[in-house]
Each structure stands twice: as structure tokens, then as C-alpha cells.
Length: 91
Image 1 (cartoon, rainbow, N blue to C red):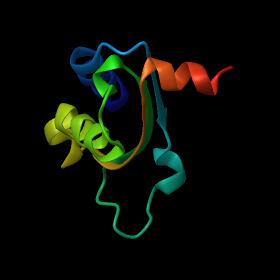
Image 2: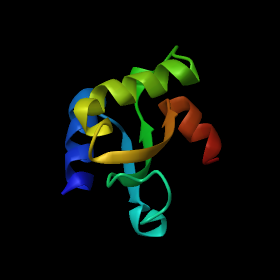
Image 3: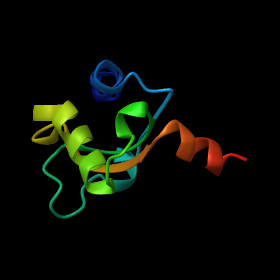
Image 4: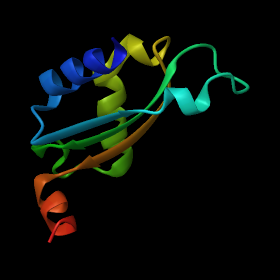
């Protein structure tokens, strides 16, 4: 299952404090341009994002998912936070 594969790759790469994956594929089935991959939204909290810009964080996630971005994932929303950023948002 794609969600499980995403989780395994992201956990192995980032050892996140928090990982949440939402499969939004059903809401996008059949729209123009969708060649079959799923739509997902990922929230990751990891120290791996310390000192990284938003673009760098997204690039790290794309690299971790590798070839999944070509076939299994059509669209990916990313919320990549450091533990400090996450704790500020939850106070």
C-alpha cells in the first residue's frame, strides 16, 4: 500500500517525532492530468529540518520518496517542521 511505503521511507530517513499521512486520493480521482498516482498530505516533525529552508525541507522529502514521486504519488502536500516549531504551534 502506498501510504505504508511513504511512512516506511520517511521514518527511515527522518526518524520523525511525529508523522501523519493523509490520503486524499479519492477526492481527486479522474481529474485532468492525474495519470494514476495518489494525492497525499504529509506532516513531519524532525530534527533533520533544523537550519533548513522550506525549499530544502521539501527537497529532502522528495529525495526520501525517490521513485515514488514518478508513479505512485501524483501530488504531495508537505508540512515539515522542527520539534521547536511544532511545540510553538501547539502551545
